[in-house]
Image 1: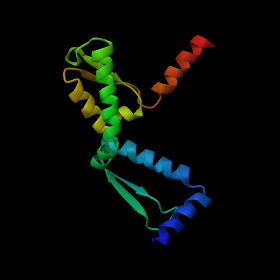
Image 2 (image 1 turned 180 degrees about the horizontal axis):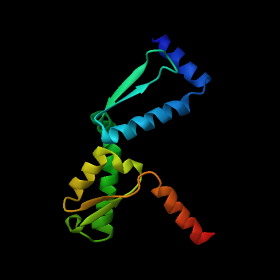
Image 3 (image 1 turned 120 degrees about the vertical axis):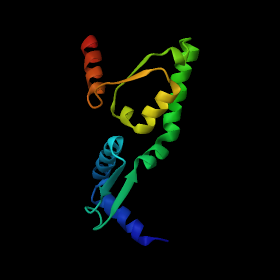
Image 4 (image 1 turned 90 degrees about the vertical axis):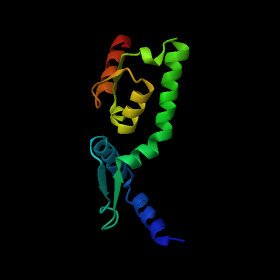
Length: 137
């Protein structure tokens, strides 16, 4: 029905622009962690093509996945560890996705008495892998 969209998609595939698009989406996600709006400019695909996004858009698109994480965390703490969520006084968060506003607020709601401590968002996973590797190799 919309041949222009198929043409655009084929151009993206032929020009191998998938990684550039993924990088722009990642940059927008990072921007939306601290700012209410982000804009992705896709002029490199089609002149004048840009897409705006808001924190609300990001929260809506990630809400079901965030809820799965919260459900798993609560289950682990309460059922597996036998600890009441209200008894958790500190939660240490690490990794880039923990900066998502919807994630932080959902964790705070699930663990209302916990102080949220933020670790190194961008290199903590790699650091942890390095520490683990040093133990085995």
